[in-house]
Each structure stands twice: as structure tokens, then as C-alpha cells.
Length: 350
Image 1 (cartoon, rainbow, N blue to C red):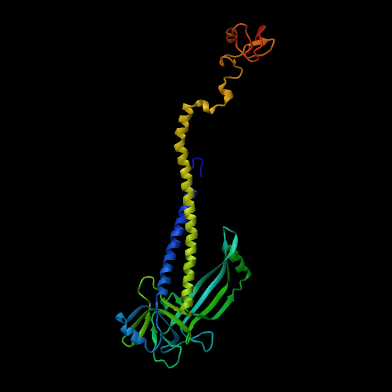
Image 2: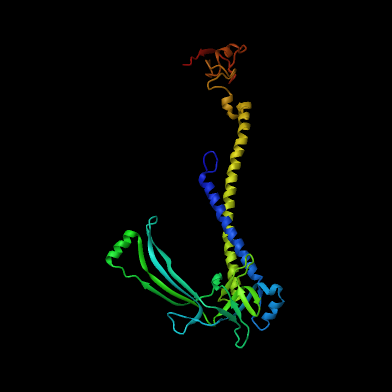
């Protein structure tokens, strides 16, 4: 705050930044809250023999947002793991991730950095079937890669460290990048794995399909967790974003209150300044102490205007000017001690 009480540029930047961050966090919180609310209101349907009858009685033979739990079963062929024997699945994701250290010119430190240099995902059609054997109902899962939570299990992971030569090390220091190695990962959705599907459940002729929902705030889930754990995780995310929005919102409100309070104090000083100036002009004696109102230093105690110029003897008081001494009634007495004045000595001020 400058001397005039006006907000500085830094304070305006702080207020604007905190307001923008608060608005962003609140937007994310509202989105997460809507997703959690829709997930909480999703209809839980048991994967059993009566599934088709339930869908037949539903409007449009469709449940817009349903929860269904079962086990993964391939329709025809399966995907074999490239690194693990006898590991079969319906979704396979191969990832190559580069790990390196990058020189930060600001902090003068080496920071860890990672980047995916290659990723490939393979899928085959699969169904969700009841965990109990012998049930003749299945739900075809469509567009599994569109799911927000795809329950893949890491079946293979290996890190291949780099072995640079001396010239490579010099080149790394000159370029500001030091490769650490390549991490190879394989993730799969195994056959027989438990899976919780949340989406739109549709009866198309004699086939039941689970597909991404169309309603606002409805997300598509294919999670390895059960529904209660999935819902609890979403509600925890909502609480986290709510706390962040409240913290930054409080900071923005505190900054705004501080700026408004400073503006109020400045305005109040401006409003009071004419009144103070008027009081000084109307009552100038209020701003001076009593000894100043008694006249200048060395003034006559009788007229309070002329300087003292007489020494009264025999008391020795110097308290009056010549004109006031002459105006004293006979017999003349000292105005201070009331002693009779026998003679007067003139006093000359230089």
C-alpha cells in the first residue's frame, strides 16, 4: 500500500489470481459433486436371469445409468501376455516410458522427468457374466477405452537403465538432459477378473449391452473395485476439491476485505480533512498551548503586548513596560508582589 492509501499493482494481481483460482477450483468441485451425485443415484441391477425382463419393462428398454457387477469373459478370442505365461485377458496395454533428469536453469538443480514415448492398447470383445457358474445371461461391454476408470492390472514391469559412455555424459551436461532409462510396463484386464460397470444398460433384441451414458454428469466406469469403494473414492475427491475451493475462496475474500478496508480509511481521511481545516481556521487558539496565548516571551504582564522595560526596586521584579508603569495609580506598587516601588531602572532590550 502506497502512502496515499491506494491499492498497489501487486495487491490487484494477488486478488485477481486468487479469484481466478477460486473460480477454477469451484468449477471442478461442482463437476465432481455432480458426478458423485449421479453415481450415487445410479440404479443397481443384479446380473441374473431376470435382467432381460427388467430391461423389457423399462422405458425404451433402457436404464440410463445403471450399476452392474460381474466377471470378465471373452466372446471369442483372448489376448496373451507378451511377458507372462498363461496370462490371458481382453484388454492389453503396453507402455514404454522414458525417465530422465532435466537441468533447471532457475533453481540450478536436476529434476526428475518422465515421458511416454510409446503406448499401444489392444482389445477384444468381452462380456460381463455372473460370478456363479451356469448362469446363461451376459452383458456385452461396448467402448471400454472410453471408461473414466479402466480397471487394468499391471502384470509386468521392468526398468532398463541407460549405460552412457564418457562422451555421452559430457553431451548430457551440455544439453541439460541426463537419461536414466526406459521403463517397460504391461497392463491387462484378465479373463475372470471381477469388474464393476457403470453406464447405460440397453436391451437390443436379445443382447444386453453396457455402453457410455449420454446424460450430463454421468461418467462411464469399468472398475476393478466394488461399487461402494468406487463411490467412496469419488466422494473423497469431492471433499478434497471442496476444501481447496474454500481455502482459496477465503484467501480471495480476505484480500478483498483488506483492500476495501484500506480504501475506507483513505476515504474517511479525505472526508475529515475539510472539517479539520475549517476547525483550524475557526478556532486557531485551540491548537496553541496556554503559554503561547499569554503573549510573546518577555511581554508585559499588564498589557500582554509590549516588552518589559522596567526594573522595580526594591523588589527587583521585571514585569511591566514603561507605559503601564506610568499608568499605575499612586502610590505605585509592583503588579506581582504589591510592594511599593521606590525607584525604577529602565531596561533596554537589544
